[in-house]
Image (cartoon, rainbow, N blue to C red; front, side):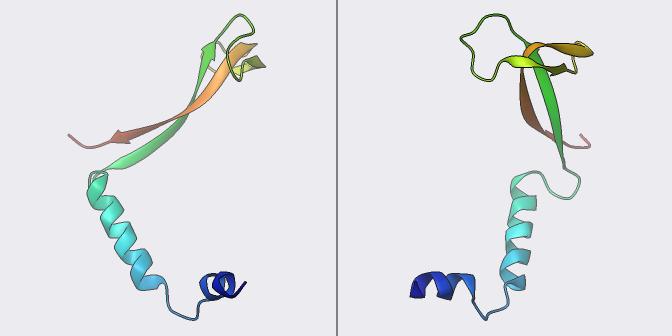
Length: 79
């Protein structure tokens, strides 16, 4: 309980740490000219042995069909 309260109710300013974390993340994923693109992708599937296959809207097909839907994360840069 005491450790939980120490972590959750800390009285220190987290801004310097958050700023440093943002700077390090920018450095690691390509700098200021980099953009992370989040997109959904639908994979049409038949059968019953794949995880997450259900009748749902498949953007690739433009209709409802049996498919898996996944999220992709792409790093895009000016180069």
